[in-house]
Image 1 (cartoon, rainbow, N blue to C red):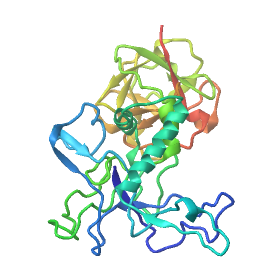
Image 2 (image 1 turned 135 degrees about the vertical axis):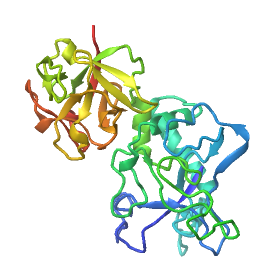
Image 3 (image 1 turned 180 degrees about the horizontal axis):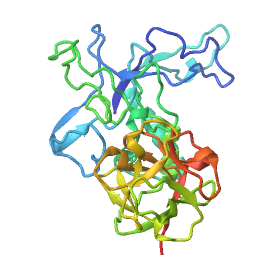
Length: 365
């Protein structure tokens, strides 16, 4: 476990003046940075490269993991800064006010507080899945490999992580302490960064999203020789090359599933995260037209040339359905306007969870 620190930037916008009926006082996610010493105390989160253990097979597939051949830590982090927002703990008699007495709380911090907090999160995963899960790390890194890191920056106070992020990516701060080389400068050892880093690992956890993904996450197929229909959850119709065209630029549309070759797609892995989607009829790939970053751009087919606008990530929603996200734009395949009719354009749009943005794979005959 690594540690983070809440970073309210001196403001109170993340806290309510009065507790809610459930006694909560935070009104939203609070931005986080890596926990490091404030100069008054030699305390910080731990992290770095092992001098004893080789890199495990499951520590892969996530941006930022060093190619150092050794075990890198931490894996994940939670709030741990005792001088900023400590955990309040009451024990036995101090938890209930007796006549003439007051409630008494101890202030607790450090990764010694973050670790049992994550143990509690894993207990919720066990409850959600109905059984013990054993070593958590292989699943943590598999889920992290499907994360859209561009939308999960947890250190940007002006834009909070997307609601579907499992890992809140800590991108600011380091775990440096006074006396360490570079302390107080940009060259401090083990800075936080995009994806995995040696200060906060994969970042902090959205526990509800973790439990839901752990319990129901589909696994993207990896057999490149298999063809699939890509069926929209809202309409049941499939992603198709319009008019069975063999030309670059042919638009993608919805159409009744008939297992025609223009409706079948081969998933060819580019790396551990992304695929090219190759149309069986034309041999061309699904393409974000012109490398557009705009909502509403219609998807087309084009000769494969290796661009990020031709690479797609299949991110599990449940045991059957995926959102299909473009590597360049970060937007997902969408049946335009929630359309269900034959000929509805297939566009890209910001993910918002609509059924018209969800797709399942049906093996072709």
